[in-house]
Image 1 (cartoon, rainbow, N blue to C red):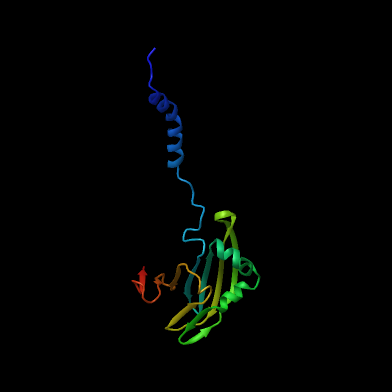
Image 2: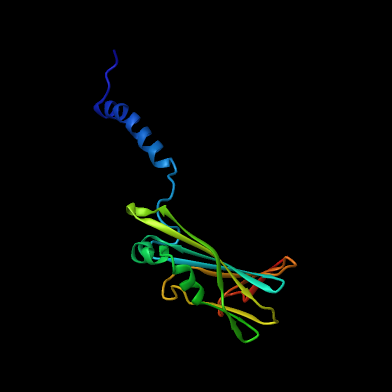
Length: 173
């Protein structure tokens, strides 16, 4: 029988443990945190021009901390109307009121046992014109991405960005 040195015996004994550790560390795990951070409120407004109506498809994506702080208010029955008042839709210099068509709030699991919250609403305004502006004053002091797209009946889409961003707008046929 061959004699093994103590280091060789230690290496033989540790090989299965090292293999298990390597396998565990190399296995990808799903992300459990909010992708842009636990403090963000992301906002999206998709404006759709259709005949004499303007539809705004509005989304708020609240990370864990804002959901904990503001979730009850966002889930409340009157929040959709409150959010509509903070969306300023102006056509040819005239502010148009947005009427709530539908809305919903959906909670999802987040990091640390906290929830994240997504609020979706569809608003409608009556009007036509040649100049349109939309200002989103919901959660303006919170960090997070903000995007507005405008789509006309002919299918052309514009992605609008804040002034000072690298692109003023991006056209996609």
